[in-house]
Length: 363
Image (cartoon, rainbow, N blue to C red):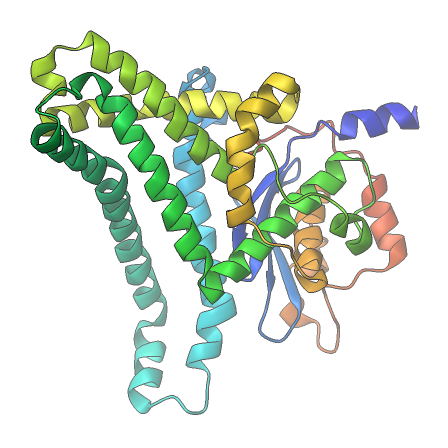
């Protein structure tokens, strides 16, 4: 009986996201966020998140559910990221004795509003940058190369040309960003997230030693999803380039509009494949997942033990919930809320999460 439970436990869907000095995990008990605070303690709290797919069943249709999941993950994940930055970084910066009177006045009067404004501006700029790099730049570059160098003879290869350019830009961008100290820390938490999930899926006890031994490259990772979507976009765009008349595909702004309209289809197909690759690993899915897994060598890094502890805390909470007294660690003077006795750990690992509703497991 116990062996059957162990086998079922491997198929409980879990997933997460790396944050600033923390990790967000989704599991049967809900969504949990664990952060390493400036004082060295680990704060773990449950986050309210109910997918709109549970309210409207038609949004669970294949392809459609991928688009909905992507949008929800973007919005909710960005909120968690901003909250983690505020709790683990901004507090440190604004509480220093060396702050000027102006800094303290801004923090006291506009702290939360300023953070919200910065978040909105950052989100808008991020979308603008993504559009510029992955939509406008490849389309414009193709037009220049095709018209100036090849006298229009490349028009049948537009989708392939732009797709390759997007992949090159994506790889270069990720490599450059990975060199930033703060982002490298996030990538270490990304690695801890994957290792923790692998440890759980292997049916092992969630300890630092067991998690440390796991791989950091996971087939359901968001990096794999993005990279795979870039490849799928080449195939789908090529099909549209063949079917549509040349007076549409040959005009840059019209072609960009077509690319925007088919973007949901690309995201939906990519989502379905990522789900299949994670649930049914075989030779075919491994081959198709290989480019995305290779990219994770850039977007993940080997975590230290203290970072692994945060991943374990988040995953345990997502699987079993957080005891009420542990959700507000600041109210426990003298205690170390991140530590857990062996008896408590055994109690949590003995609980059976497989009967709970399973969330989408996308990084």
